[in-house]
Length: 249
Ligand code: MF3
Ligand code: CO
Image (cartoon, rainbow, N blue to C red):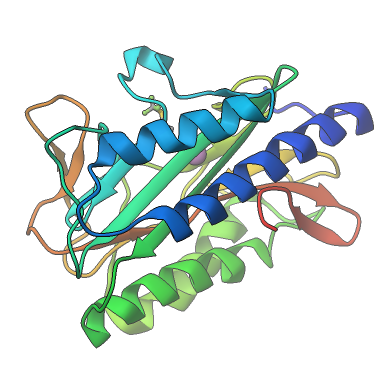
């Protein structure tokens, strides 16, 4: 069931989104070589709690961290660890969920640490752009599949792999609600998009193959070929005039 949110619910999601957007901005400034992903996680937790909110992923499906932090060929769901140390040239995917007064926001950024190759720089930039290309189609009267088709249409010219095993989703009182939102064109059109629906759109784009696998820690999803992957995600609400991004400031 895809729920339509009331204006009050959207206001709370907007608040959650603002907190999440600020923590992302803070983390981007904080990350530097020598920090462990666990230290970044603790930094995020402190910031979120200071803002009277909580980290939604903590213990969600038993996830053992506050935020998911995934480095280079790790695509998503990286567990914050004491012994994973950030170094110059890394790309770090920070994926966070914030709950404020019972309402969720979900957003991911890819942070470039120092200098990376032109190839990786472009991957990160284009992954972010693909989100904006996709949400152009998130308007009342379109179908869910129009979003993924928009992402794929933009990404295909670069020959990147679009991750298929993990997708975007509805969001509200829960982090994961209906519908699923693939980042690629699908045969099924999906539901009709309506005003006041709220979605997390999150392209995961690989430099090489689209194929991924889950590592031995049972969480971290990695690219099959060991090449880097980028992730960009925001929570949006559908308005009469198109999408409003709730988790970006
Ligand atoms: N970040 C994921 C998403 O964007 C959800 C993480 S679930 C967790 O949908 F259990 F790993 F935290
Ligand atoms: Co999400």
